[in-house]
Length: 133
Image (cartoon, rainbow, N blue to C red):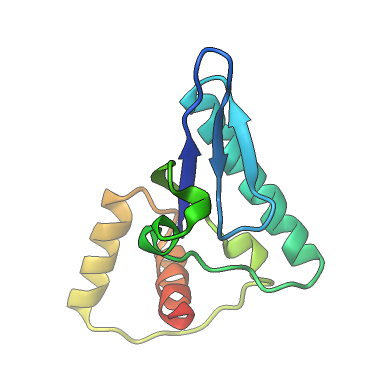
């Protein structure tokens, strides 16, 4: 899943802050953008693990446009953070799915070209995006 991030650019005295507004508590900072981004990935996983372990529903990402309208983020930059949420959705189950060959080829090409873990991961993400609308 691609979660929007809000970036508060720092200066010589202030670190760069990153928030993942769709994941409660996912706020962090770093001296460089790379450090802040890495820390954002880590805190997103920590918060999702906490939500899942408490039996909560994993929050789905909204659009950057949704957050751009929020005055809290008015002076911030925006980006995207790719998070694999499948570990937080519960035990996996095997199912048989029948799809046209062309669709399977398109999925496999997309998975390969975007370095997605697997066809199953792609299908789970696509289903969660559709269900979240």
